[in-house]
Image (cartoon, rainbow, N blue to C red; front, side, top):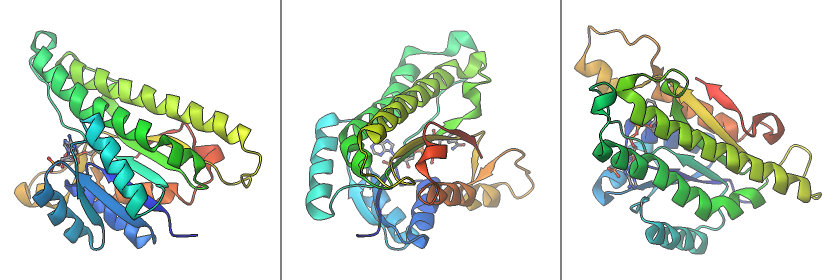
Length: 238
Ligand SMILES: NC(=O)c1ccc[n+]([C@@H]2O[C@H](COP(=O)([O-])OP(=O)(O)OC[C@H]3O[C@@H](n4cnc5c(N)ncnc54)[C@H](OP(=O)(O)O)[C@@H]3O)[C@@H](O)[C@H]2O)c1
């Protein structure tokens, strides 16, 4: 069997680079996807061995084309790590604009729905199928100023729980799978992510409660070595 093939959806950021690096270090094949060809190429180079692919993940037809190309050129996908994010907020409840809601809905939720629907069959059939998103502590402690953001992230978490329920059902139906095998969908939770460029920009600042992107990367890579039974549907605070 080939090493697991993992798609990083929204891989151009520091988090995407760190996740791709950790997956590559764990021996996986990594396809990293961003909407901008130049930025995703640069990120793949920094990760050292990921294959860059450009796609607007908010466009269902483009995602279907992407998935068909991946299956043709690389084979079925074993992992989908969804990192497309973005933040809009502030201004109290009155400041939660429809424009911000639409942006977050497209960026966070539509890209998750598009990619997970497209890759679900591959993940469900894989002996190590893993889907993960990175959610926010604001989901369980929302404020008026981040109501749009927290509500969209909550919707993304609920979507992942639906995927997990599907994996659990499919796992039961497949008696041939090894006891430790099967697919798992998980929510990783952070307050905020931290990377070296942030430290360099604000050398005096401390970042209490932030999660370094290298910690996120290790957590993501570790999902593939953790049995699905204890993982599927988990909400893991990093
Ligand atoms: N950063 C934080 O402090 C924080 C806190 C809590 C949770 N999170 C979550 O952690 C994850 C990673 O965070 P992040 O800050 O690295 O996310 P991000 O920078 O907002 O998004 C990751 C990448 O997604 C790409 N992207 C955006 N729209 C896309 C589209 N339509 N199609 C394809 N790619 C697209 C962007 O690159 P291109 O523009 O080049 O495509 C971007 O670099 C996100 O889910 C975020 O919500 C982050």
